[in-house]
Each structure stands twice: as C-alpha cells, then as structure tokens.
Image (cartoon, rainbow, N blue to C red; front, side):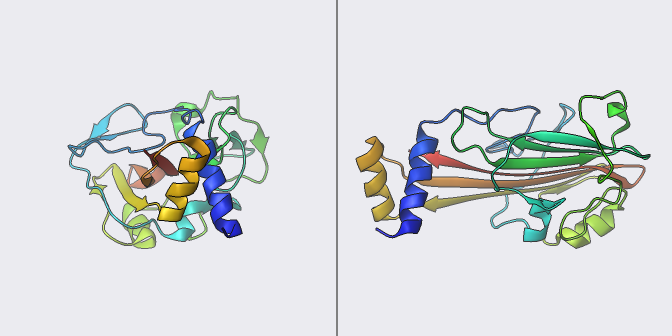
Length: 217
C-alpha cells in the first residue's frame, strides 16, 4: 500500500473514534442546511430556501491572513489594535479530537462585539484583512458575489450564502484497510463547505467560511 493511502487510512481510523467538533455558534461543522433548505444564521435566526450545491468554493476563499482551512492548528482569535474594530477568529476541533484541524474562520466588524475583550489585540489585523482572492469587510454585495463567482445557495439584501455538499465513496483498498484496523464498515465521507456573508447598510460586516468532513459508516 502506498504512503498516501496509509496516511489517509490512519486519519480515517482516528476520526472514527474521535469526538465531534465543538459547536461554538449555530451552523458550525457538518451539514448546515436541513433537508427542507433551512440554514441557521450566526445570530440564531434562519434562512429558508437555501439550495445545496455540488462542487467547491474557490480556493482563494479558503485562506485568510496566511492561514488555509484544513491546516493543523488550534482555535484562536484576535482583534484589531486600531479603529475600526475588527475581529478574526479561527475555529478548530476539540482538544480531545485527533482530527483537530482548522475548520472555520470568521472575520467581523460587528458593533455588538465592542465589549469583547477576550481576544488579544493585534497590530497586524485591520479592516483591510482579506481572503486570498480579495474578499474583505466593507465590500458591497455585488462585488462580493463577483469575487466568489458561481451561483449562490441564497441571496437576500442582508445575506449571501454558499453551501456545498459532496460525497466520496472509499475505494475497495481503503474499505479493506479500515475494516482490518477498526472492524468498521466505513462507506465513504461527506465533505461540506460553507460561506456566509452578512451586510449592513449595503456593506459586508461579517464573513464566515467553514470546511468539514464526516465519515459515513
């Protein structure tokens, strides 16, 4: 068996016996759109009529401040040292989870967080912080849609949502290795990618991008 398959199988074995990802806010991890197209918003509200898409978000959307989703790391947050106030947070699996990787980031200029002093100040963070493909706070909705491209799952005056769901069946070799190591009949894995942008007075004041994988037995 080649090294890539051995490493992949080891990760699957670890995931099968790991704890689920911590859900620090609504909509984190796994399937974020219900079967009837309802999407949970960060403020606890809901959007209906949200379409499930096939494919992936553009690669440039998955990286911000030099960090790409899926790279090893721990949860962290920071806030800008100067006005206007900006918060950037990375979400990860629980410490007990051997599959703990960066699974989401959120950047926000939400005024409701003005009293939040738990995130350390960083002189490197500002309103100009952007994803690799140039998404940044303060952009109008039309510009955000143009930079992401493709058909979104849902667009309203306040929100833009992209939700991608894909299934990959394991190869016979992968299934056999997992069966031998765990006595589990893993069938494959579901991958999810979500982007939610919120707009206030026509400008983006919140952006959250997440990516996760779930093993299906």
